[in-house]
Amino acid sequence: MTNTRPPYLPGDHAPADDTARMIRVDQAGEYGATRIYAGQLAVIRRGRAAGAIHEMAEQEQRHLAQFNRLMGERRVRPTALSPLWHVAGFALGAATALLGERAAMACTVAVEEVIDGHYARQAERLGNADPELTETIRNARDDELAHRDTALAHEARETPGFDLISGAIKTGARIAIWLSERI
Image: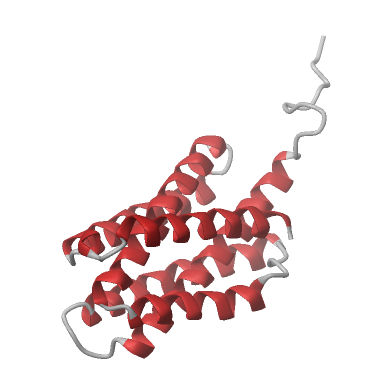
């Protein structure tokens, strides 16, 4: 007898819907990251952290290009919140940079710690079901962890009010993920 039941429970998203949500939210996240770094670079043009921020921004541009390609190939619609992330990402980057290089790096630590967990859960959920997407997510995650480590090396934790800043940014990142998956 053949099992005709789908490999998911009623109320669960179909696997194709699930991967579309992953691509949509990841593209939105990478877009938001490019905007955060653009805001930081608008304020921090020179200084000890400028080169590192520029390098991280370039990596985020490459991640965004990969997720843009996947969206086109798989006909995934972008989040309707892209205009909000355009403004909010830049504002967050500029605001933290105005607080100083360490605060800009604290922003990176907070965002990348949330993204690390987000990408890890996605890769685990995908398993071997979609090798291309899993590899893209894992590669992006590796870069995001390197960004966190770079930010820590630039004394992010020495930022006055680090825990408060980090907590607020992490909460915002989690809300952005939740919204971008759905809208």
